[in-house]
Amino acid sequence: MNPVLAHLLIRLYPRPWRERYGAEFEGLLLDGEGGLCNSLREGANVVWSAVCERISPTQGGNMDRDPLSFGAMVRRPSALVPPAMSLTALAIVMGHIAMYGHAREADEGAAAHLWQILMAGQLPVLAFFAIKWLRRAPKQALSVLALQAGAVFASMAPVFYFNL
Amino acid sequence: MRSTRNVVVTESGNGMGHYSDPPLLVLASLANGPKHGHAMIEDIERLCGTRLGPGTLYGAIARLEQQGWIEPLPPEERRRPYRITADGLRFLRAKLTTLHQFAEAGLQRLEPL
Image 1 (tube, rainbow over the protein chains, first blue to last red):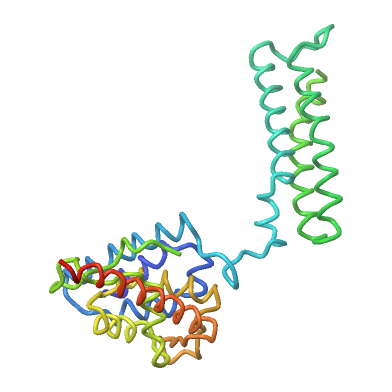
Image 2: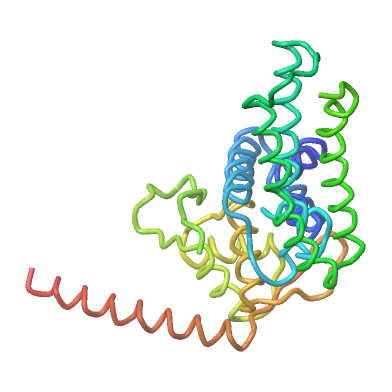
């Protein structure tokens, strides 16, 4: 098989798979029989196998992602939910400002109540994340907490800036 | 274990009569000594007429290795040979025994016909 094509085909596989098998798999593809028909058949087989590997990755042994890595940690629900709530709160505030302006109202409306619920509601989730992960992986947990704090400040900024 | 849909059948074959369970074929190929990918493809084709595609072969290798049924040996240039483990041999023996019993029972049913 053409080396460039072989290299491109291997890029279709997930990174952990490539890191483990990429070099020897490329060697196998380059050793393959020549001919357009064979290359097309093998290429189709590799594409299909790469799709299968993405849908149902090989699990276990050295293929598992480190559960304490930043990437794995940031995908946990307790890490994702607080920023999602902060960003929803920010969207509510920005939507309210866009529709009604930033003049301070005498009475708190539905938008203000929703914003308060979203901001207060994420505190138990934040506490849960901090308690669970700060001891196990302090560096990665602090990075995620910094991300969550950034989202909190982003949603609070317009409220304090416009004195809503 | 991954399905066997993406097996490349040889040109001489008609898709019938070829046993195609890639992990089992890989284990059977490694039963008589370590082999690298290309040697496994050739050996499996001689063994049962099925030519595994490279993606199918490495899909099976990855799963077998993670299950501890085969293990890699030091690479030889770009090629990495694999060998079957004791667990892999036990699994292969059990699987082939089951297949043997199944084949015998099936052939006995065909005898009166």
